[in-house]
Amino acid sequence: MPSTSGTGSTGRRHRVREEALAEILRTGRRLLIEEGPSAVTLRAIAREMGMTAPALYRYYASHRDLIQALTSHLYDELAAALTEARERHPADEPGRRLREVCRELRRWALSHPREFGLLFAKPVTDADTAPGSAAHDPSWRFGAVLLDLMVELWRRGGMQPPTDLDPSWIGQLEEVREHLAGEPVPLEVIYVFVACWARLYGAVAVEVFGHLDFALTDPEPLFGHTLHDIMAALGEPVGQ
Amino acid sequence: MPSTSGTGSTGRRHRVREEALAEILRTGRRLLIEEGPSAVTLRAIAREMGMTAPALYRYYASHRDLIQALTSHLYDELAAALTEARERHPADEPGRRLREVCRELRRWALSHPREFGLLFAKPVTDADTAPGSAAHDPSWRFGAVLLDLMVELWRRGGMQPPTDLDPSWIGQLEEVREHLAGEPVPLEVIYVFVACWARLYGAVAVEVFGHLDFALTDPEPLFGHTLHDIMAALGEPVGQ
DNA sequence: GAGATTTGCTAACACCGTTAACTTTCGGGG
DNA sequence: CCCCGAAAGTTAACGGTGTTAGCAAATCTC
Image 1 (cartoon, each protein chain N blue to C red):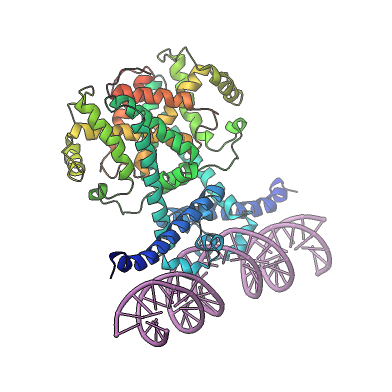
Image 2: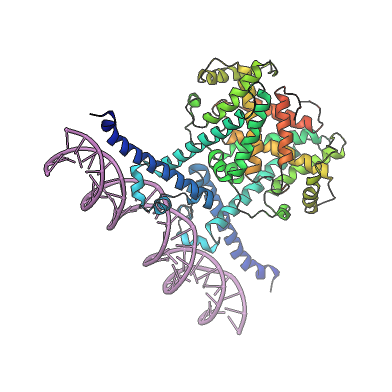
């Protein structure tokens, strides 16, 4: 009994199945890009793949599940893009790394507006966000890239976190820290992360969602100023 | 022919029609609040009103038009809430007025999350935003409240707008100014308005859309800091 | 090769937006 | 007053959606 035969056949099936799963997501994403989120339909995906809609239920339990798998995949892709941007700069310059990761986030959002909308324009997530699920939340996979860099920045001593944390936050931040991997992160850094994330998200979202179209055709300089402010708040010199 | 009879009877019909239009929007909004945006359906609205779906076409040309009328109404309501907040404070303290208007924006967004999502979470407005439509854009009705206060703040001399505007912006900002009513606004103030609006939108959206839920159960202090920063950027003393 | 599992199909249900054709209601001019 | 015409509502239907049930074929396991 060759070792490949036992798992070979089931492995073959598994491989075919995995390929089908991937093609479904690939097709759904193409529809998302080319025709918008409302076009990502079970029947449309099946049509593109030469199948019928009910067949897709062998792979995803519902339309909702399929969309969720797609968003999860996109979170991973975004995290990979950010990681790649991080690795393009030396590890001993965490400030520069963070700046370029932020720039990459905006770049990715602008070059993938439909995907960004799917990930970040969720009007009111209906009561499924237990705060404890931070580490398992798909969205955390890319948030961790930012947090790690901020922790590194803090270790180097450049950052000066606020010393007077709002008392009502300590409990909440401690709960977040509980669910983070690796060695514990000081609460102040988590606070700085949250504040910077809020600002970064706002700067990117306001642009991608078109809320500046009425005024600006090229908001890049505005983002530059915002990023400059963020880095200054993190104690980074004004370089670059 | 009494003057009231000519317009009185047709006025009656008009009044009934206006009431129907209003009830449609009222019902649609109730569905939006109670069951989410996907529940705002022609058939559902008609059902709630004891009618059939095609009857609604006597009032709105399409589902899209109905939703658009609803959003337009909501923009007006938001503008009214902001105006009311403004009037609660003396006219000779534009800084305080602006601060409270910003707070009211957050308050309205948090107490009307579904409505806020409908207004501000539009993933990629599909090529219908000619920059010239600023003054006629429904969203401008509430944006004007913010801009007017900033102009007033600038007139009082507290604000120190940047002197080195990015040259590529001058053309764009001038185009915006063309479409503003009243006496001309300096380009620098328009720039400051855009920058502050981007930040304010971000601070509110990140919270309403639930992108801080993983960390904070009460992001109010964070908004307080953000607002403090914004007011400082506008040259306002740290008061309050 | 026989049995079991997986994968696809068709048919059907309820819902959606939208259109066409018909009926009812009702205000206004002779 | 009465009739006419516009306005507002109806039902029936088309194509689209997610979803389920039941069946056929292919494929893996023994």
